[in-house]
Image (cartoon, rainbow, N blue to C red; front, side, top):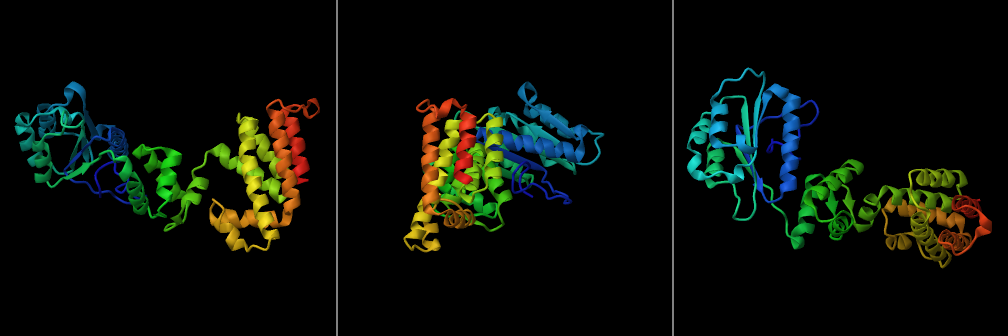
Length: 341
C-alpha cells in the first residue's frame, strides 16, 4: 500500500490495508499535504476509532513528546495511528530520542510525519528522512509542479487512474479547472468514475465532460430543440431557471449548440459524410453522432430559423425588443415552442 492518504493507496471495499511503521510526507504543495493528512485521519478513525488515533500539532509537536508517546503503552484495540504535524520546524540536533523510539516502534503502530516546506527556510530535517528510511518506512514528496511541466503531470496522473489523454487533453483540462494540482486531481478522479476504464480522451471530450453544470444542462435544452422535443426542452429550461441561471447566459450556450447543429445539417446538404463532419465538432464522438442524426432530421432550413429565433430572444432579453411585452420566461417558452414544435 502507498503512503497513508495517497489516492493510489486507498483500499478497495472489503480489502484490509497494510501499513508501514513510519511515513514522511513533505513538500511545498501544502494543499496536497493537507488533503493527504485529512484522508489519513479519516482512514485511521474508520479502522481504529478515535481512541486509536493520536494527533501532535502546534506546541505539542516536538521530537520529545512524540518519542514519549511511542514509548508509552496504549489501551487502543487494533492499529495505533500517530499523526505528527509541523516537522518542517524541527532540527536535527533534537531528534536523538525520537530516533530511538522509531527504531523500536511497537507492532501495529504507524507514525506519519508531515512537513509543509518552504524553500530552504523550512524543510524536514535530513535526520528525519534517515530515521523513516531506517525503520523501513516510506517517504513521499508532494511538490508543486512548474507551469510548463503541468500538462505532463496531468497526463501521468490520468494514466494512473486508467485514462489515456490525447496531447491536447491535459491543456484543455488545465484551461477549464486551473493550475491547482489538488483541483486537477479531483477532476481527474471524477473523469475516471464517469468514463470506461482505458478511455482515451481528447480536448473535445474534456470540454464536454468538465463543463459547468449550467452549461451542460443548457446543451440538453439545445439538443432537445434540435430533436424537436418540446416537452424535454421546456422541462430542462424551467429547471435551469429555477436553480437561478440567468437567461442571457443560457442563450449563449443554446446559440452555440444550435449553430453547430445547423452547420452539420448544411454540411450534410452539401454531401459531406457524417464522419468528416464529426471530426470538426468539439465534443465526444457519441454526442457528435447524436447531434448529427438530429440535425439531419431537423434540416438546415429549420435550424437556420432556430438560430434566428434565439438571436431575437437574446436581443429581447437585453432590452432590445419588447416581444409584445411578455416576460423573458414567457418569451423564451414561446421561442422554444416555435423552434421545436
